[in-house]
Image 1 (spheres, rainbow, N blue to C red):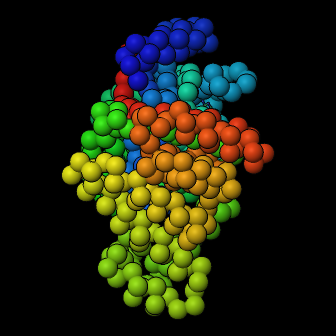
Image 2 (image 1 turned 90 degrees about the horizontal axis):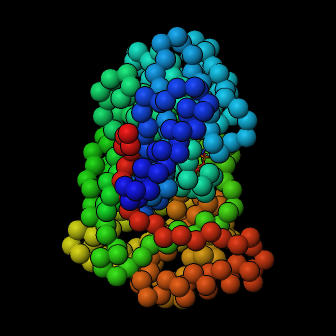
Image 3 (image 1 turned 180 degrees about the vertical axis):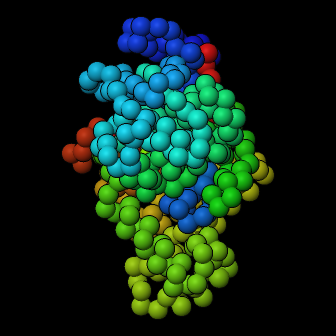
Length: 391
Ligand code: ADP
Ligand code: MG
């Protein structure tokens, strides 16, 4: 996002804060949504992921309080200011959006950090429930603001861990660590190669425009819901696979040992499929990293397509709309395409030559019309900056 746009966002959000709370905010912060280039559902298997930050971001104007009160307001949700007492915060007590920022405050205090209250107004351009991590953007922007205002001196990855704990325990959604780390740690013009076991990371240059390519996000507008059902089942299936194979996490099965591992799983057909996806997906992330680092960017296209097939056939979390994006894109000259995010809806990504973007966009839109699906929202994803203070 250009500085000019970020400044405008900061100004508008600060002004609204002042209207709501009667004084100027102590500061304004931003944290982006993300797209995952490759490495899907590997993050709760201690594996590899490779997200990059979107220009879409949550912006928060925040002031410190000393009286144990937390006031919350979102420009994107109907209703007034919510007022909570810090001493009353308790996990899974709140089914509203306020659970995300309140959960961050709870997690910080639980970890022993002296957060004594805050007034928060936020506004986000990250589409909610589209697989682009609007929830992590919300958590990370609040965590970063409180980190600065209360001089906690926590690093990006530490804030990400606390935000994950907020979402796991306070909100009650069993998500991995990728989204929060991406929002906290990504850099403009780069994808983040992240080892979710120890959170070691490497910034991989990822400037498609310079090479005549574009990456499109196609939001199918099909809403997923992470907190329940299928996501939890996949997670349990992966844990069962690791237990049956006698490892801490599926990350510990090397790609070279995949066939032997599958043979050991015998007639556990469902678990075999989950294990095969995770082990091959980790290998795909490593392949994409080495292709990008050796300048063979176009060659990542087929790897993305392989990843989609694995999510569709082995992990079984695609849906007709996502498959339609990928099939249409690949049949119409895209370099690669795959679903991204948790699955069962949300978004797909399409890697394409710059010169093919208009035709591809039109073809995908037409395919959705023909199938009788809701029109998708299609936009270009430019690798953007991670969380930061705007003013
Ligand atoms: P995703 O992170 O993929 O967008 P989630 O289901 O994890 O989807 O998070 C979406 C939830 O995050 C919303 O239902 C809402 O509670 C909260 N949320 C996201 N953006 C905002 C916002 N701008 N204002 C208030 N709540 C938001
Ligand atoms: Mg989320």
